[in-house]
Length: 106
Image 1 (cartoon, rainbow, N blue to C red):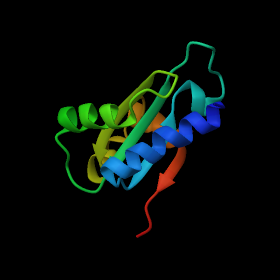
Image 2 (cartoon, rainbow, N blue to C red):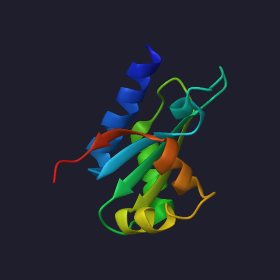
Image 3 (cartoon, rainbow, N blue to C red):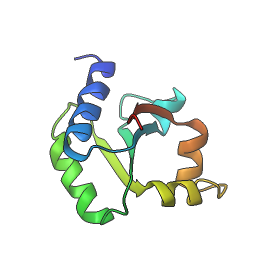
Image 4 (cartoon, rainbow, N blue to C red):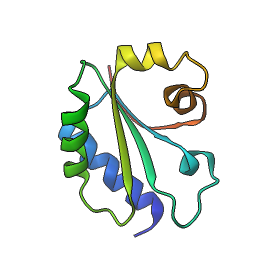
C-alpha cells in the first residue's frame, strides 16, 4: 500500500466512525520532512465538545492497523478555532502547516 493509500484508509475509517467536521494532517508528513520512522499525525475536528480521551481511544480503535503509527488528536470546532490562534501551540501549527484531508459539507 502506498503512503497516500494509507492516509486515505485512515481518514475513511475516522470519517465512518465519527463524521467529523475536518481531518487535518499535521507534523512532519504534512511539512514533507518525514523520515522512515515518522508516524501519521491526524487532528480530528468535531462539531460538538467531545470527551477527548474517550473519543481519541475510540478513533484509534476505528483506524486500527494501517501499516504506520497513527497519532490522533481530537478537538471541538470551538476549541480548535480558539487555541489555533495561540502561537506555538500544536493547534496553531496544524492550522498553519497542516493539510485538510477531509472537510464535511455544510
